[in-house]
Length: 111
Length: 114
Image (cartoon, rainbow over all chains, first blue to last red):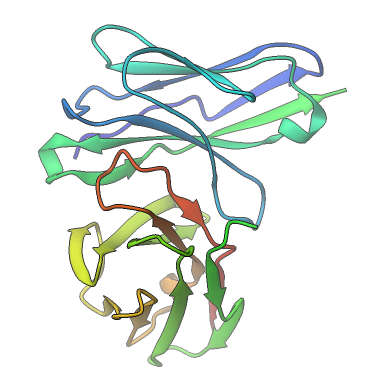
């Protein structure tokens, strides 16, 4: 099975910009890349989605290079409440479009 | 509040038993997804339904089954339960069945097998 790869954990400080990168070598041609945020004992929450280049919304930006084999979630000026696990989600062309979630990146924001 | 409702919130049972988890999707959403999240395996996709029909299947065990009813709610049935089935089970919904759709998750059912 194809899989995504993310850093297991990251630390940063309040007010900093945080970038989390996900590698997805077998992304399907027509698939989108989606990022979710999860707090303990809660279901994941949609953050942002993109297909190529750059997407920005009120909470984050998503950068996707031309080959689409990776993506970077950018969180501007993080706060303590951004401490959570972040997942990237892509389709898997080798597995009949199964939904493959990355292992997630545990982001810890320090004061 | 995501609009996705899962019941029960907690379930404690014994090995060999059978349980049913229930999910009501957001109003207007036609697709339902089931996920399992345990400490050692992260978030695992189990199965997806779209408008009553199975749309995609992940690493769902043969002991597990699901269905989506005409009113679009879904049930996940887990049988011959083993200790390793202890996990959080999440349901998510989306308006359509294609994978470009952002999913909205419920708060999960925590299943504990004793």
